[in-house]
Length: 423
Ligand code: GDP
Ligand code: IMO
Ligand code: MG
Image (cartoon, rainbow, N blue to C red; front, side, top):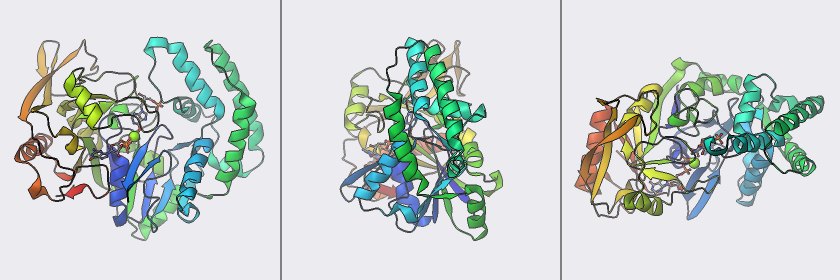
């Protein structure tokens, strides 16, 4: 049995949460492998919307075990809020949510450091979600971090104090005017630690190896998107983890050889939240329509998402880096009503036409080259089979498949679980 991967191919918010939820019925284990509460994964079913940040998107299925892997960074305070919400919704998470002892903790001072670092950067800020992601991964690679397994013994408090004190010095170093009440933040933090401690901690790599040995199907859930990857994204406007396929190996302790299908999720257009280059970004009515119809506001921060046409140069790059075997196209319904729809097929780069992603895709280096497609007016949101889809949408899909040389196996036509067309 293999581990299938599900990853975002753009700048995040492609609809990963929805598809993980849809696919969970086929898996015994759903395992998140990187990122933290910077993620916001939305699930809609039975008329209700649920947003998850750290908890894997299989949590609403009774039978699936949900694993928070070693590559994830956990903010106990946000984690507690998620758990409290699940409790209110009647989800008995204690029996099917396991946490890796090797996952790192986001401390209150990591969040403050994130804010101080962004404030100090001024106009050059990353547009971080301010959840402390960068500083926590910095402490991880700097070998200063505190892990879930540490809180099982009382000595961790000494380590906590030393690290938090060091962070306070660093916050002052940034000379950004950040106001905070650390005592209040720590009160919430330690309360949340108590709840975290009551969960089942596991050596998740051993747990997953054992599951594989017993032929249990596993789905690894990615957060963010490939263009936010620390190595392959639009650096420095990226997140601090490996969001691409390799991140599943390091974030769960699985070998490359056990990876089966790699599901690549993309929106039928493109969005980005935060700073950084975005060649196909639209500043016209078309962009405004995508934003309005697609309700393009961040699930974690509520910030408006920047919108633009589909970028096949970037999509091809993401497929290559991840070894995508199946594509899943989301939010096709949002494109209904456009007279014509553009796809970026190449960039003009230093006077030449190129079809690969260059080192820098800032506007001064690349200009998108488009191919236009006829739009369609039909409302897709009630459609349940491929046969019902408008011919011009089928042309759009066929073009993408031909260019990517990868089949599109799911077309999503609305946020609900049921608004999913399998091909
Ligand atoms: P994730 O971070 O990749 O899980 O995606 P988000 O949840 O941040 O953002 C995706 C948004 O699009 C959410 O509000 C979803 O409910 C919504 N969504 C997902 N699939 C579709 C779709 O096919 N059509 C429409 N209209 N909305 C969708
Ligand atoms: P999901 O899993 C969209 C973006 C932020 C910022 C950059 C760095 O919901 O797709 P960070 O807080 O990680 O230091 O921010 O990355 N970003 C996301 N954008 N979806 C996400 O997650 C994101 N997680 C981080 O907006 O530009
Ligand atoms: Mg999201």
